[in-house]
Image 1: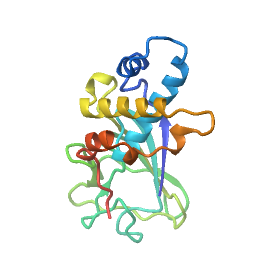
Image 2: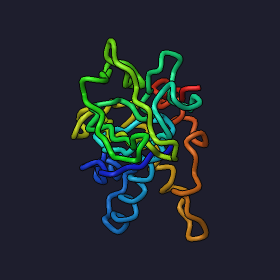
Image 3: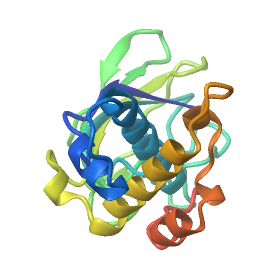
Image 4: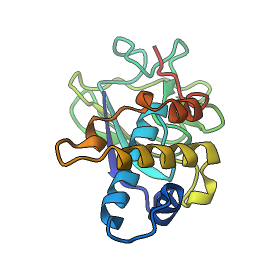
Length: 205
């Protein structure tokens, strides 16, 4: 299973100006650094919660459809596919390799998209079956959009506050001797962990 961002969010849930205000930074000397740390803080928070905050387009690859391969993380006992980033906004396409090696797009009449549950689910319409695929890696490619919306106003305040807290922590611990934003974990900050834990998506077994 692979999961890759194909279109980054158009904005950050917390602006650089908001991050600076939270940290009480009045100068513009570190604006670029704070902007980079703000993005890194958002990425940490999203990864911890298995979420996208601002609408993001993802490519999710699987070796086959439910029922045709051993159950990987993300498939449930009802042969639904649990989308690995929440909240699910839409599924753009499901493309697969047929048993003969041809590329085909799964018709939307075959499946339904449930955006009301978390994580979102892709399931079969009544009377439909998942098609067989060629027995190769990444035989199925699903393009989907996850996020609360296109702007920061749609993102829950708990998550925005956690991003500010993490960014502030990075800034205070910055050092030329190490790359704080790459080595830091959410769990190292108790305030951020408390803010993010209740909205964390538990990975499917």
